[in-house]
Length: 167
Image 1 (cartoon, one colour):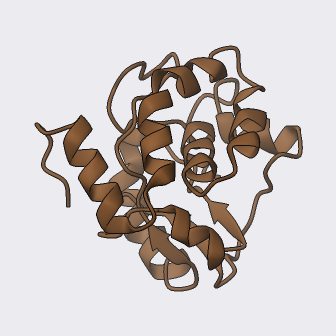
Image 2: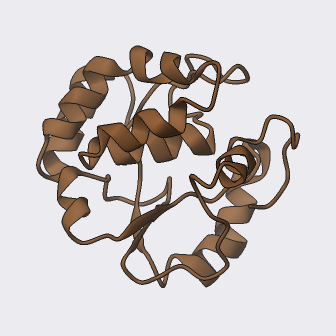
C-alpha cells in the first residue's frame, strides 16, 4: 500500500480494516503478484500453485513508476507474476473503463477466475458499488473462470474485446 490515493476511497485500506486483506512487505514465493505488464494472465490453474494473491495498491497516475521501481526490483522476483485479463471497472472513479480496476476489484476478479467466487463476493460486499463490479462482468468472469489455461483466457479476452491489442 503506497497511500497515494484519497484514504477515504482506498479500497485496499478498507479491505485491511475489515481483515479481508493484509498489508505485506515481503511476498511469499507461492503468491500471485498482480502485474499489469506480465505476459501471463491469471487462470484457474493458478489456484493449484498459489497460496494467496497480492495487489500493489498505488495511484493509476503513478503506476508505471511504482511498478518499475518497486515491483520488479523487490516484489516480482519473489512472487508469481500474473496479469488480470481485461474487465470493466465499477468503482465510481473509473466506472466502465477497461482495466482501471481498484485493488478490491482486482483481487475479487482474481479470486473469481481462480474459482473462489464466494471470496470475490465477500470482498465486493464491503463496497456500495461492489455488486456492480460482479454484475457488470458476470459473463466475462464466468467465461474466464471456466478457462483452464492462460491461452484459453487470451481467447476469451479477444472474443470480448477484439478492438484491444493485448500483450
